[in-house]
Image (cartoon, rainbow, N blue to C red; front, side, top):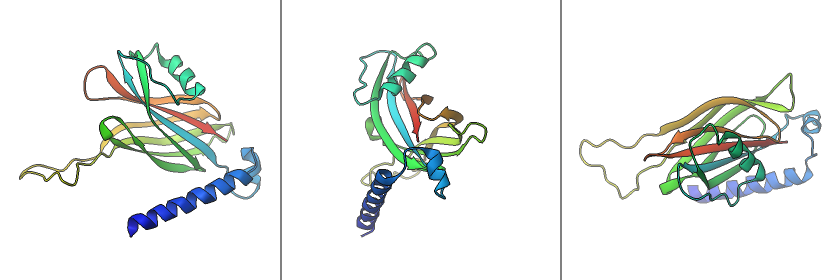
Amino acid sequence: MLRKTKMTLTALILMISGLSLAQAPPAAPDRARAGGPPSYLITIALLKADVSGDEKLEGLSEAGRVALEDIREFLPFKSYQLLDVALTRSSHDGRVMLNGPNDQDFSIEFVYDIDAEHPDRLLFAHFEMVDVTRPSAAGVLAPGEAPSVDRYLLNSSFAIELGETIVVGSSKLDGPGKALVVLLTAIP
């Protein structure tokens, strides 16, 4: 029953969001004058980076490709693979779930404000990625075995210009020469 209610609520939110997106004025300052804080479309992409292998960036935006090119000289990775993308509209904070390699689930939470001196810049005071993968229900713990706990993989703060795509950070994966890379884009 709870899952059905949750799915119905999610569908209703998506429907209302779609209606408000279709009717919303294009510029953030106009939304602010309408009485509420401006909202922004936040896109978060999760990629797997490797020191070898073939590039698999189907579905990654051109801005995402440019952001990766900008960091190639700083990171040792030669190839990137797009794993998952989340898109959310927010006026201050948000939380998204992304799926990574080996059915890992990642929760990303963020909080931002508009830069008072530069209204086309968002200041992310909190950006956190946590591995929330849980063992299967069939997996019974042996005596003395502890359940898995959330692993904090990325915790950052940064500023971003509207329309810009940045690399928020990277986190080492199990095994040598592999990492997760997180990209973020903010659009009015």
